[in-house]
Image (cartoon, rainbow, N blue to C red; front, side, top):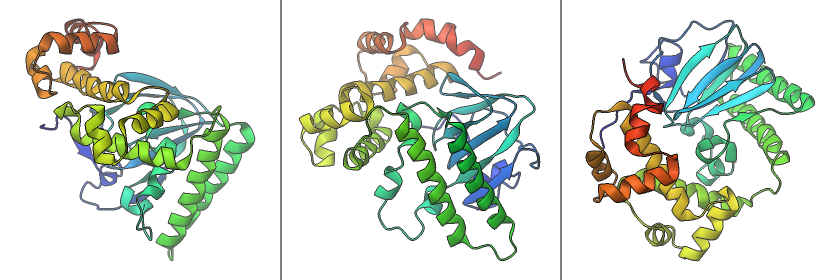
Length: 294
């Protein structure tokens, strides 16, 4: 499927689009405003921290306000736009999957950090005051190392890992029951497969086969991590893409249904309504209007 939106690298956000850097930390009061004001996707992970002021961000049609003492997470591939910045103090840490996995051969290390994939979770975290101070101290250490003339990539990577574990601990403390790493890793693999295959309209059994587990086991994992069945998770991801296509293309309902593996447009409309609470046509003419390209 052809990409509708630009994919921006870290270089674009430091106004050096040809810079292949895989890690950057910047404070808002020091950075030059990036030449990025359209709907876009990232090729990298981003963690925004706010010390003063407020920001409003939109991810996949959902608006979030970030207030002082909070963190905001953006994952690769999410449709994103800066809606509003009021005078803020804080900053942004941007890093690629490759940077995180330096010296690691096992991608499962990345999957163990649950908040880095916020497709099914809330992207805003508000730690308690003492935890936020600890996080700020680690961010300061990363920033200090990055500014050194003799800065070491291995040191920045180690400090980044500490930061991510601190944040994960905050996430876990706000969760009623922590999900086992084994289930979390399998779920992330399931989610990655959905991202690659959602347009093929595969069923739960087919995804379970790709993961070499039973359909029952996949449903158990999905319920444990998200509170929803595997079928519901698949449908949510597919309908998210439907919302994007309805909002930012002039394709007909039947064309969009076909693009997403639904050859019965009436059934597609029924599935969309069960997910979005309105028909595809209603969605296109109301909610999507404010985000349509000018």
